[in-house]
Image (cartoon, rainbow, N blue to C red):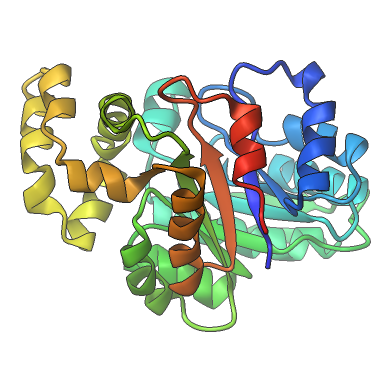
Amino acid sequence: MSYGITIPFDGVALAEHRSWFEEIARLGYTDVWSAEVDGTDAFTPLALAAAWEPTLRLGTAIVPSFTRGPALVAQSAAAMAEAAPGRFALGVGTSSNVIVQRWNGLEFDKPYQRTRDLVRFLRRALAGERVDDEYETFTVRGFRLGRPPAVPPPILVAALRPGMLRLAGREADGVIINWLAADDVPRAVAEVGPGREVVARIYVCPSEDTGTVRHQARRLIAAYLNVPVYGAFHEWLGRGAALRGMWDAWAAGDRGAAAAAIPDDVVDSLVLHGSAASVRDQIGRYVANGVTTPALALLPLAGVDQRTAIRELAPH
């Protein structure tokens, strides 16, 4: 089974990651998955991992489908696939209106269609084909990769609700799921269908300081679950009533009240905490419910030391 972790690590300069990569490989972690929100881009940490630890599989979770042109996504993916032959997976997805529109000044228009079109274009481009096509959301004229990868990377789609989950199952090699509980996994996997890789970013904090973890995790959960795409996702999962107080307080401009309104059981299901053994058991529930590649997102809350936590949560 694949067993991954999210990079880069909080508070660790990219130039200092080499020993971290070497240690996680020794500990049995198989994958590193990058994120692209408001920190590093998705590719640079993976390029360093490719050079410094040649046993690790590398994945983007995710590259937004709006913030780069289609040809540039293909070029970046091809370069990573060339740097790490057979060890790179390209995860793409819609991202959110916050990242696309507010931060990058782009229209967040037809996100489903944009991601579908990008997957279709990438299939052809990464295979070395010349692409001259009009897609619903963009047009590519006469593009061919100058250095097509010898081993084209698998393409995964980040998905929340049924339409995108089905797209991942129908046109991609797998799906990336995020911000959901272990008990939510079967519902998501059922939409994807069989035979696809299921990568889940799982938020973990091996600390028994329950009160502090919950207090700090609430702020992170509120920041995410008030983004419209994540709000709609949790409505679909059946948490509308539980999260109504948070959404109402957030809409009224009271961020503190919004975080405080998140019930304990919601916090506990989305951020795994407790002893390291307990957290590992909870990760196992995701796998039992259909996740093929857990990708831990380590949260250094409640004073948790990241390096110690990485060792404690290593696969056994």
